[in-house]
Image 1 (tube, rainbow, N blue to C red):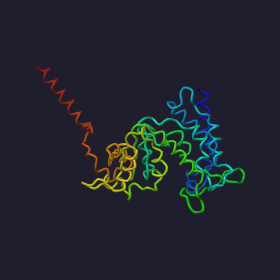
Image 2: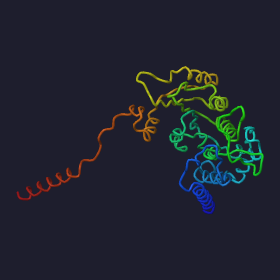
Image 3: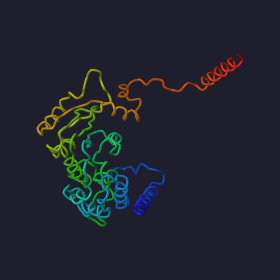
Image 4: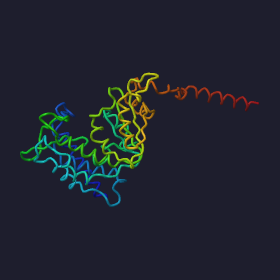
Length: 317
């Protein structure tokens, strides 16, 4: 085990060194360009795979650790030497089978239009598991990649995320569709869906969640869905849970015999949100904190002096 952890450490250290070398002044603007492919993709994927398993051993112990070199091969074969805009999600089937783990009961968290806040709220599985909190999605959560028909089979500049007339589906979009299908089909018990109630409509029939996750949520395995609305501009006496688009979503789950519930600005969500955005309007929903600061030091000094005076007076009598 020690040797395995040291190997993980070396891979991570080497990857970080490469990143710092590529971006010597920190994350320069061109390094954040979402269309530039991640350099040293193989090392990034294998390092992420190893690190995830080292820090989430509850999914893999005692004998189901995944071979990260095999994982890389299954991942890269889906798009390497392929037309960059014609990648089918079926090409990731071997990768999905190698990396998929169970989703803990009542812990699945789907989302739409609330990234990156949803990741802070899920807290890497402490509260819930998004698809990116599992090995299946963690490997693809940060890198940018795409295929090329020319050697070495990887593109250096990748297509935008959304499909277009000239680019039907590229490698990353196919990856997330395949991962989401398996994730949704693995959910059991009560599931949660976090949606942004500050936009209209809150739920859309052509959203990623609607197209690639809702159809794969299995009746009989999932018995309840709770929609968690994050409303950054709440209005007293009005609930966004009554919006018409959510009635459409409710009907989809009712057809699956899955109980539907909606909560707006649940307290644990508001507390998490306000840790990073304390001046937000949503934070007005929280109770006003009371002054629990300790008394000034001179108060204790006066109390000590009074006690000494009392003791001296008693001794004199």
